[in-house]
Length: 200
Image (cartoon, rainbow, N blue to C red; front, side, top):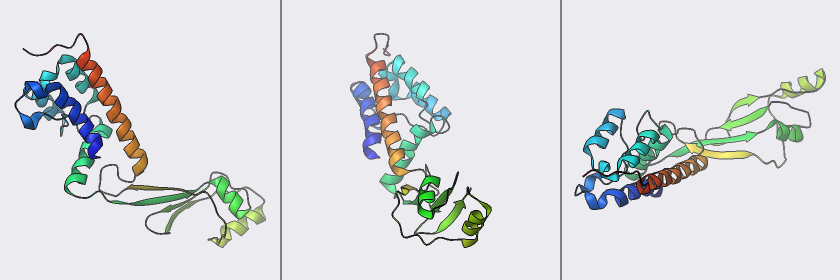
C-alpha cells in the first residue's frame, strides 16, 4: 500500500517541489470531500503543477464520494501506517461443474460457498439435474463426506469495517496498482503538454 500511495505523492512532488516551500503540501491531493478538494486546488501548492494537471485531477476525483477506488488507496494506506490491516474474510467456492464430478450427479447453477474462518459452511446453493429419485437422495443427505481432490477457488478478503471489506485482497491490490500507474501516466502527460500553463 505504501509504495502505491508513494508513487502518487512522488509524481506531484516532482512537479511542484521546486516552486513551493510548503513541505506539507507536496503530496497527492487526496481529500475528504469535494469541498476540501476544491480548496486545495485554489489555495494549495498543487496549483504550481499547471492548469492541465489541475484538469486531470478534477477529472479523476481523488476524494471521498468521487473516485472511491482511488480514495481507498489513501484510506487503506492510513490504516496500514497507523493501525493494522486485518485480513479475516476467507471464501472457498466449489462450482457446479466441480460438484458434479465430486458427487456424481449433474448439478446446474450450484455453488458450495464456505465463507468465514475455518471450514464453517454458511451458504449452499444447489440446482440438481436428474430423475426424482436422484434429486431426493442428494437433498436428503444434507451433507457430503467426499474424499476427493478438487480445484477449489479460494481467496482472502479485507475484514469487515475496513475499506474494501470482503473484497479479494490480491485482486484489489492489483486494481490499486493499475489505477495508480494510469493516474501517474495521465498526470505526466498533462504536465508535459504544450498547453499546460503555470501560475506566475
